[in-house]
Length: 274
Image (cartoon, rainbow, N blue to C red; front, side, top):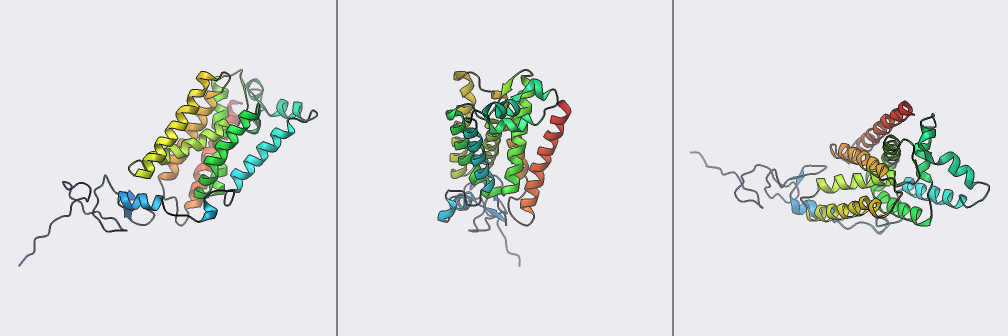
């Protein structure tokens, strides 16, 4: 005697046979619906439920677990305040601003120091708000070392993009580095776009990104080239991170190495072109 066995169909697409199943609830899922997890795979409903899980109160905000992002905000704010000291202000901006003619003369460090200088209260408030809103949660997820290298790489990428596009230009501000954070979140949202939470996050990030990219049309003097450079660098690092498990043994080290490798490559390019 032989028993006839049938292949189950996806619980969302009854016309698609599949041998995959959610390792949490056991429902069959097709290749289009399945979501990769740290252990096994998830159906869209379970994946969305895990992304919207209840977290501890100390995970909802504040600086806990995000020392690098917090330190960057404090350092930038302190430098901004020092910029109002008459004896220090000329030196800070003279030696720190990204003056591309001086970068071309070998002063490559300006590609980084310019990210800590800001032109006016509105400028620093927006950048620090974006760094805090996007950076603290990201640092908690990927680790402080990975976040530090990401920020460094995005700052370098933004500075290099502006240097190559506007050889005689001058710029300052953390926007290039901040757009690197946008790039990571955008790639992450796109990857999770098949879930309700992922779609909402992706649409929100697209809206914020479109608003920021449109600002140069209405506000003159914005170095949009730096924004674009930082965004591309952040997107590349984010895609590299998502190509490997975010958690698990060695995950934090792999993320840090990937981001550090991109930062080292950009640093070498900065030395080459400066």
